[in-house]
Amino acid sequence: MKARILIADDEANILDTLSDFMEGIGYQVDLAGSVESALTLLQTNEYDILLTDKNMPGFGDKKEGGMSLLKHAKEHNPLTEVIMITGYATVESAVEAMKLGAFDYVMKPIPLNELKEKIDRVLEYKRFLNSENTLQMYKALHNQLLDLLVNRDDIPEDKLQKILRTLGTKIDHLFGMQKGYEEIIETQTEALEKIERYADHLKEAIPGESPYHALIEKILEESKKRI
Image (cartoon, rainbow, N blue to C red):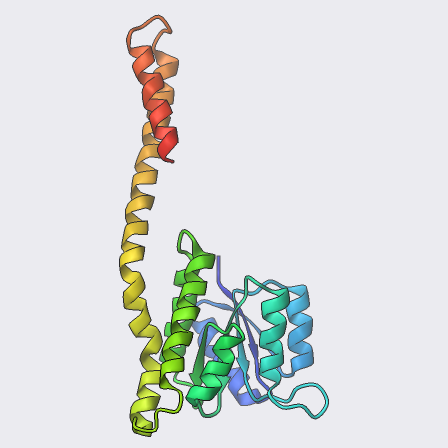
């Protein structure tokens, strides 16, 4: 099934660019040019990801409508992960978004390949065996690393921007071993399910008085314990 993504931005050219790009790589995309239309879509559809501009106009004269969407999604759409678009990413703005539950952020002008990596990262983490805990762990670790960068005037601006862009990739390495273990578990589970099916067939074919019947029952019992 295609991942479903809602893009919210008040700039039509950004909506068009992101829509063409994401549909071209196989995502199902809905567009919202305002906070109000985004809220309507969030209330009527389920999305894997909300990609929203942090500084789009909010209700009335309020700014940072994207933050309102983030708060709404975290309260009412718990299965939707949020990636925040920022016009100029500072550590403070990144920390603010992460503390409210954003999964990640991307800076304008939006590097499309980098955005794809972030979206793929969300979808990959959603496939972990205990995806909810994994997503929370990722965000907590990301948040803690950002806290360490706050008020670090000793770090040149260009280096700080590079760190902000690459934090997610660095954190991925920490979860690589967990994913490796999960792949082993999934492989073993598939193998045990096959053993259970084969044992069921043997049980049907072998008479109940056969000395092998008890052995087959034991195989079934043990395989079910591990699945």
